[in-house]
Length: 257
Image 1 (cartoon, rainbow, N blue to C red):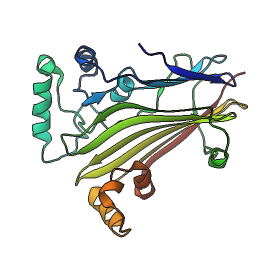
Image 2 (cartoon, one colour; image 1 turned 180 degrees about the vertical axis):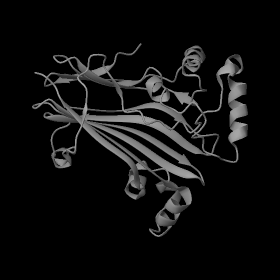
Image 3 (cartoon, helix red, strand yellow; image 1 turned 90 degrees about the vertical axis):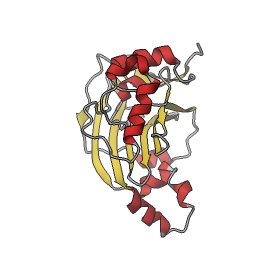
Image 4 (tube, rainbow, N blue to C red; image 1 turned 30 degrees about the horizontal axis):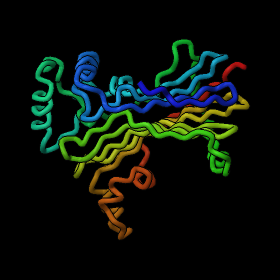
């Protein structure tokens, strides 16, 4: 197995791992544990981890815990023309584990904000924002990686994808975990978790922001720009500028030296 990439800066250790998609046996095991059919592409061994050794604080982003936050009741299922066919195709794919394929949010929408280590000092609500101006400075990038955790084409009706980007500078780091979903002719959704760490002050700020809008409204806004609409519909960075915020929270913790 390929070793994780890692770097240590200012008492923090940052590591990432990128491996191929899971094979059938681990997928079946994960399905039994989760109680939902998994996405088409699941990178169950991938992760992004930030650890502060002295305080015991750590945060990890992985596919299993993210999928465990998907609604399993079916109450937030999005209606689409092919949802029944999709459900049937999933049951055929996983014949041996059919009993766990119940109605659930098949867009795989998650509000996952990362998995904290067992003895991590808790976050507290804050009004303090992530210092964007500091992040705009042309500091050297010591470490950068982008890791996909899962992806699904929603039965050719769009895309659902969870990925993490992390960049480490000499004085600070920023992690962005982004869930991006485009359900054609229905809805576009972004759920972003940003984790900012200042190595000198050992301050950690975590921001969560959910954005979404009806597909047709977004298409009309983009039509006014005369740009390539299909390309823009696949660009979460551009869509993030358009979509309204529907939920937002910020919290922080200062770690012991």
